[in-house]
Amino acid sequence: MRPHSPRLLLGLALACAAGGCGPLGRALSYASIDPVLDVGWYEPSAVVPGDPAAPALVRERSHALDSSALDQAEAYAARMNSCALLVAHQGRIVRERYWCGLDADSRPNSMSLAKTPLALLVGVALEEGTLRSLDDPLSRYLAEWSRDARGRVTLRHLLEMSSGLGDAIAGLHLGDHLEDALLSRAAERPPGQAFEYNSANTQLLALVLERATGRPYAELLSERLWRPLQAGEARVWLDTPGGHARTYCCLFATARDWLRVGLLMQSRGCWAGRQVVPEAWIEAMLTPSALEPSYGKHVWLGYTRPPSREADWSEPFAATDTFMLVGAAEQRVYVVPSRELVIVRLGHEAPGWDDPALPNLLVRALAAATHPAPPG
Image 1 (cartoon, helix red, strand yellow):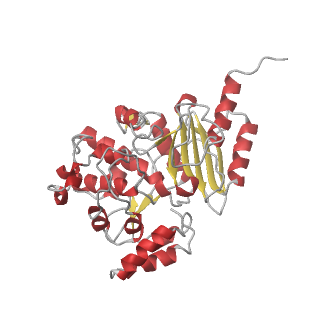
Image 2: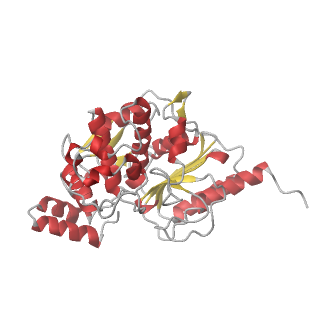
């Protein structure tokens, strides 16, 4: 989301006219902040406990990536308004740079990177039996929709952004009651007919998960993902004190911990010898959806063309197994399993950002190191 969205401000003005001026006041203050770095604005919040005794990620000079390629990647990131760049090869950090006053302990706003950890938790819940099936209708978990046509939307529809439900971004991002904003969404079309990237889908998944487990999202995230991943403390933004986490955005974590998420997915859900997320679920997340081949289940797939909602890329991805976590203002986690490569970029909006640029630069450098050109 961008700070001066006319659609957002119009929605909030209407909310104020209906008697809810709290969101409008929040919108006016939001328009004056840095949405990535001014993390103090996102209150109330809840702590996501990590593992304070966990070993740090290993840093070393790359034996496979030429330093000049890493220098070029760093220069591109710096030129494109970045605040953090991390590159890991074979599980070890080979380049780490910060700008904008950030450092390794900073926890900026992740924007929609936050969607993917929620999807990982859905996979864990399916394995544990807390959620029964991807094809469960929402009516199974949401009593309010038990006799409502919207109850026919399934978990799969939510994960693949094909629910047909209306957008709720104004009410979600700046309102005080997430459940009301979600459950009042009208169905604009039957589910399964069109791909429409919509944060309400993610937030509904979180509501289902919380009701199925009887536990708040921050606790689930800590216990099932963050601690097993040996990550540090993070935070999530709540709608009210002790209320619901906004899971479609705003998981405040370090760049190194986003790197851990990418490494977990690169290793098909395994971390430090433990299967944290089922391998079959990672494969399912990375399977193209029927309605948008560049989207799986809350993760973008770097195939041969850009997603329909994005500007043209300069070229296809050099490695066809590339996938990425994507957040507004070009928050990115790129993962290339075939090259054991993970790249994290956090920062400000960067007009002209070219998604294949960083991964392709480093994939080609690794290919050249593996198969150098013959002399002469």
